[in-house]
Length: 409
Image (cartoon, rainbow, N blue to C red; front, side):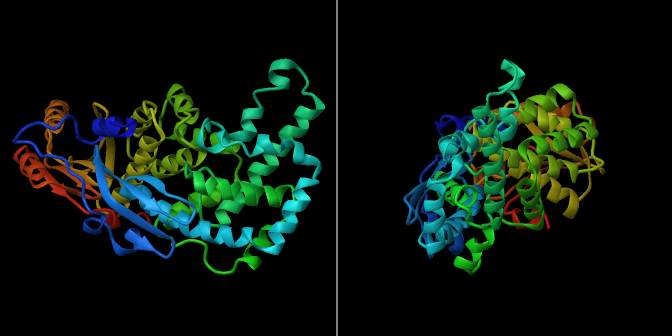
């Protein structure tokens, strides 16, 4: 089992070793049976069969002109389809005269010495705890006295490239810190041509007219967060998020662990903080950040990002949230009427032995909360008939297909 499947299992009543009846059995499915037409196939992508349920999400293999992509979960697939559309615009730009000229200029640029440094993949898909700019704040003068002239120039190059990359990504409607390797390759090429070769961002869109993405994953909230990330350095984002989390009552130690966590990009940290901010004045939001600090891989970080946004959507569109409650490694919403709600960006929840065990542990925690007038589980995907039957027998109401109902406006 992949790291994500194991962690997601703990997060959402998920799967362990498949037992005999009365438990569900996991089997591969046809993408045509579970995906909408726009996700299944487009002008530049096709989801190949079969899809495999790993934990609580489906693993997809997506064919694109640039190569196949492994995509973990339907929520991530929405993002990747938008990125694939943007990639085609990037390919058009790469074939333009303006790009070719800028690339030639970049090769003669005085900052060409820093190319390998500022375009290193670790910047975005590895140790992205504080971003390129603030990474350099921890070397040079801080550790060894005054920085050398070369080091000082490298710092300026890294900061300048990072800023252009963020703005270029925003123009294409994608995340500068995306873990999509195909996107990162093209985004770095275009950003380098802009930074070192003098390719103006406006030329990018004169050379490649038309909408870059399909906007399947974009809401006004995500657009606003993307604009904030594009306009703000990682170091400044960290300060901004720190201020917001302190206001929510999160302890300084937990804030530090979260904002320095290597599996959460600056975008994820900013969007999670922004979503939790929308739960104002709910108490207990520190519980979510505490759980986030336990994350061990990037897919779980993405899972938690989507969960935080679902919580904010519930608060805005369904019922107001009074507090967040941690039960084991799970965070539930406690409504003003006392009802308890678990929101999960899961594709499919089967009834397995570990699910049964998880419910038992959760019920123990619920027992300490006093009178609970309602217990609900909301899932973006669906649940098996056996899962529904057993959950309802324990007093839980199941809501499925809630993604559109909880999208932030």
